[in-house]
Length: 84
Image 1 (cartoon, rainbow, N blue to C red):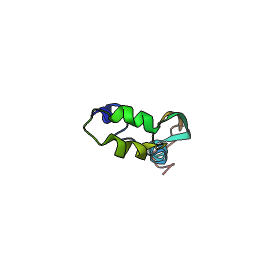
Image 2 (cartoon, rainbow, N blue to C red):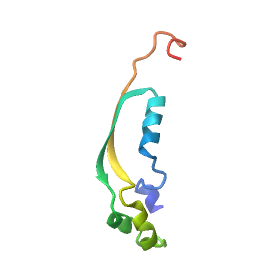
Image 3 (spheres, rainbow, N blue to C red):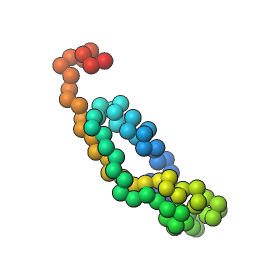
C-alpha cells in the first residue's frame, strides 16, 4: 500500500506514458526528470512493509523517477473523419 500511495507501485515506464499522452491527442511531449530514486530511497520506502528490503532495494537503483510532464493538446479537427 505504501508503494502505491508513494506512486511507485503501478508506475508507468516513460515511453509507455509518452505513448498514452500521444494517443490522447497531445504533441510536444516532454518528460523532465526531477528525481531519480536510489537504493537508499528504496530502503526508506520498503522498511517496515514486511518485505525483504535488502533483496529488493538494489533492484530499484536508477529505475524510478519523479518528473514533470509537459505536452500540448492538438487543435480540434475540422470534421470527425479528417484526422483519422
